[in-house]
Amino acid sequence: MLFGTGLYSKNLPRLRCADRARASFRHEVWGGYNIYPTNVEAAIYSHPSVAEAIVIGVPDPYRGETVKAFVVLRGDATLTLEDLQAHLKDRLSPIEMPRQREVREQLPKIRIWQAFAP
Image (cartoon, rainbow, N blue to C red):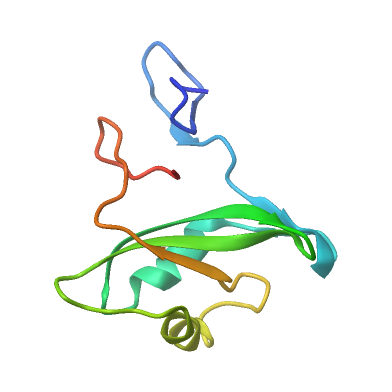
């Protein structure tokens, strides 16, 4: 783990290859399928109101873990969870669909200006 940022580096002194330490999370009710945050984030970025996005797995009493999306909106745009889900309906499977949405003014960044999960 790299300085508690959620990033993992294979060559720590030179930082050649970095990625999320936890690149997927499991959706237990649906047969233990893996959900990859980068796939969900790419779909969310296709919404015209979204400037930035990041998703994480959060505890869910029924599913084990479920998808929560943190988004930064463009300008004065608004985005409800229902609007986001309607936009993502043809882009994501039901197990990848965000069940929670939180709008933020900005997402936390690390030195390389990459957003990381709060």
